Image (tube, rainbow, N blue to C red; front, side, top):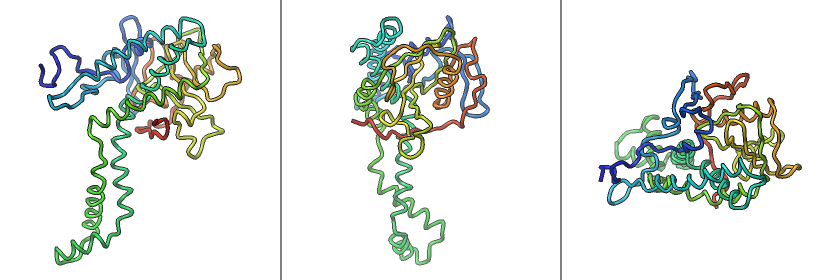
Length: 314
């Protein structure tokens, strides 16, 4: 046993974007180009085994010590998903029911499992505490402390006292590490059902031109529908769910599509729009082939560091 509660040889570098998926954008040596979203937006070559991964990312805490069983389970699931994506790309379309379910599960799981979603949920506590502060009458905090100190509180002391009481009031809502990891993964079946119920379309290109990212599942809202709650972009509140499957193929799950479930031929403008939306959705890094420049001519918005899940929780 190791000090992490696992057997000797257990992997400690856990990928939140599977290596089998990243290899579809890499060269024969497993190398791809990394573009960081945060300024100065460094660009460099790396190997798929070294990107979209963190040390013990899927570690769970148990009475016997840290467990790596979740990482093993996810690796087994990825095996089924890998075969389903290959079937989707190589065989007739629309896909068979079992392929649709497996790919839908992969898309739902990939939406939930990354660093972006985990950081979002971790940040909920902080936002909640700040919200609660607004509803705490200062006098209920100030008077007892002033009586105890025998003097008026300064403005800084008042602010700190209110903040401290607000945090204490919501501390019980904070998720443990295990609860945070497992609560996200438990949402997968609900999102899978939403994904499978949409209209599926494959977009194929004649040349290598597509990129991906550390957050490759994109919820896209048509400009005419942007604004208000609809623009948040959850699975049930977007016009399209997009994911590039390799450098020449993207899968689009549409809310409505007059042409139905078909294979579409993509052109230069289609590739540019897909790449813009995927790169803009990246949390920290964009990935693409070492011999192509799919970001050429694309202007990206500032990177975002959180995504709020507002639907698909069932």
